[in-house]
Amino acid sequence: MPLPAHLTQRNGELYFEDVALDHLAQQHGTPLFVYSKAAMLDALSSYQRGLAGRDHLICYAMKANSSLAILQTLVRAGCGLDIVSGGELERALAAGCAPERIVFSGVGKSRDDMRRALELGIGCFNVESRSELDTLDAVARSVQRRARVSVRVNPDVDARTHPYISTGLKGNKFGIAHGEVLETYRHAASCAALEVVGIDCHIGSQITESSPYLDAMDRVLDLVDAIEAAGIRLHHIDFGGGLGIDYNGDTPPAADQLWPQLLARLDARGYGDRKVTIEPGRSIVGNAGVCLTEVLYTKPGEHKNFLIVDAAMNDLPRPAMYQAFHRIEPVKPRAGDPAIWDVVGPVCESGDWIGRDRALTVQAGDRLAVLSAGAYCMSMASNYNTRGRAAEVLVDGQTTTVIRQRESAADQMRLETLLP
Ligand SMILES: *Cc1c(COP(=O)(O)O)cnc(C)c1O
Image 1 (tube, helix red, strand yellow):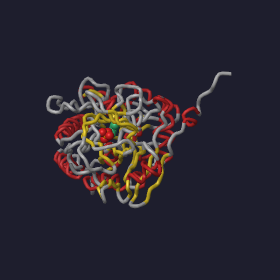
Image 2 (cartoon, rainbow, N blue to C red):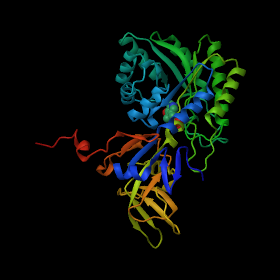
Image 3 (spheres, rainbow, N blue to C red):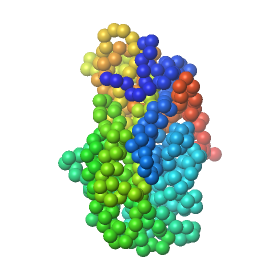
Image 4 (tube, rainbow, N blue to C red):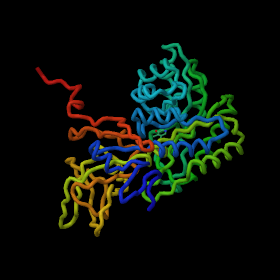
């Protein structure tokens, strides 16, 4: 199976851009996240090509990976940011994002978060319920600002044809149900401190086909027809994120193939003049990162062989949380017949596994690369078992920069107090 872009085998070892991963692991220790700047920017430029010639804003969904240098790289390359918390707002500012290029998503924004975002003048609040609209209206009055809003609509894309879509269906907590959207817009338009500017949807994650997007676009544009017929003008249409990546032979459409199709529909429905906003996360950074880990022990058994590695569910939560698959490749492959291993971490939980039944030729002390680890890994990492979070390195050609130091035990205890 081909490796993700910018990962190559050279002289019998794995490189990210022009840097040998084994050398990085020796230098900085493991577990270690390594990101390729070129891979990130290539993924972004596929969207930029797909939307070229349109009034558009690509708001990188920073919950996928919110490390400051990653944000900074994407902001410098032209991205706005999609945030889901007050903490992410502060990170967005620290990374140099202009407030007007920030959209604020999420079902549970606090009043404090709203106030801060209003004072900064962010681009848009994507509102998910009627009571959130009322709260935002009240907070905006209290700070004497107007809040620009979109309503996140739930397009209820057919579950039978697209069962993998997890957020665009009836019966989940996200968005306003199709049948209640028009009334919600009428209400928003009547709130003095709210300025209706757009409409928003986000139908799920790791979507690997075009059809759910095309269906969702049709459903959303039906709503736009109705909202505009009621005299409420929508300046932008936000299609969220959700485009999948290749974890294990998956074949999602490329952004520069998908977007021309979607824009053609937009034109055909008479909305070609509207600004298009999107919120991609995983598809920008997912395959731009790997996690390096060292084999601590081999533990062959009667029923199972275990490879115990120094990365764990606190570093790579996706297998434990979603039974997700990450490819695992030796950083310096050795000759010999492979055995079948379960790759597991040191955390005291049976759920602490990284890969099951993998054919690998390895010995203790070897290093492995867990692929497709750029999205929803470091940003979900925890300190369970008082394990410090991993260090992170950004590779750019031959240059490497440590963008986050390894977290120490002292770092973890810093905010705690012993009793007198
Ligand atoms: C998580 C999220 C995204 C990004 O999803 P990806 O699958 O990472 O592209 C975009 N918009 C909203 C509202 C989200 O919650």
